[in-house]
Image (cartoon, rainbow, N blue to C red; front, side):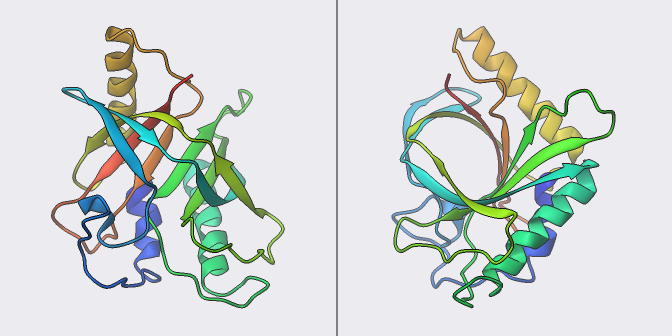
Length: 204
């Protein structure tokens, strides 16, 4: 893995759709005007936040294979979907973040089971995908523990921040679901400053 955001959003640069003003008083700054999930900060710790998210909808695809090829393949499926390869033939604006979730691979060396998801805003209903591997998914409202970091994230950055978040939660005596880890990326590669990356761990 050479960095989820760097790979995914290098592709997203081709499809990123401007949505008016870069900043919105109703959205976090790092969404840069794109639709993104709503949340409130419950507690701000020194190295992570406890957030309460509303229920969210996503368009998701699952891919198995070596990490880089699986992420590329999954992202391109979703890219084609928002670019009009859906039953309505609609072009759909890009949202944030691109969420990548790893699943246990059953011990197969070099093989990853990955879910890649694009956020779906609450308004309206997304058209059905023509690609049968793309499906609508839902995440219930609940607590998410989030560690944020900046820069161009590489594999070592994701791994180090994921482990740091787990260590900090354990040190604080906070329970979490260790199988719910998500890498969330918000920036296209042409954004050189004020980059924002997040590791998410859901409550149990």
